[in-house]
Image 1 (cartoon, rainbow, N blue to C red):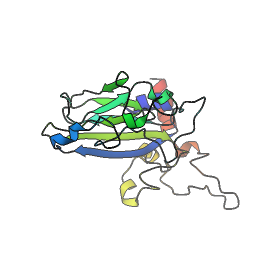
Image 2: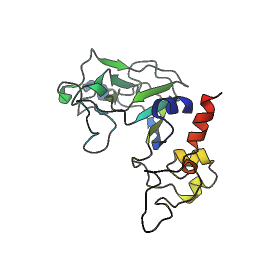
Image 3: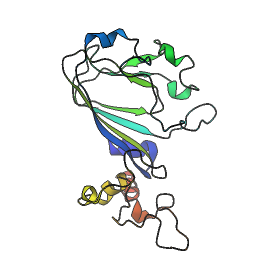
Image 4: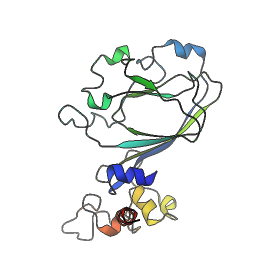
Length: 216
């Protein structure tokens, strides 16, 4: 999926977040709540920092994307599937309605998938998760990508033991410098400059990889 991510966001990117989401079976009473309402299992929301992303002409710019990899069947209702609201990433301030009353059902889509499916989506789109009455745990992997000049959500810097065996491109995607060095502010102590803000080509090996892909 990396070629698709680079095609959409460019090569100066990193993982903002990565996690495995496990939703165990739930009691039937959970499904009695209005889907996505504040009192429900998982309310409507957009993935964003506190105080939100800046708006441009009333819409959220393309700051981040996620890929979801589904490991279990989500082909039946009430199996913990994600629901999204079409066009909600273009609607200020969120759905053009009252969040407390849930989403506009005419614009809502429940994402029905089989194991091995990858969902690519704009994280400013409002989403929620249905209750899981299937009897099986719902399992999904999430990977969020954004520009390297934005700071990360899950960590500040990776632990040395995590990056010890990484390739330059893996280091790049983990928010580190592709060289493996940790001179994040450069080498000029008199005038430090963030290598995430003004990287050198050696810091972002994904650039050379992307250029090679274009010539294949």
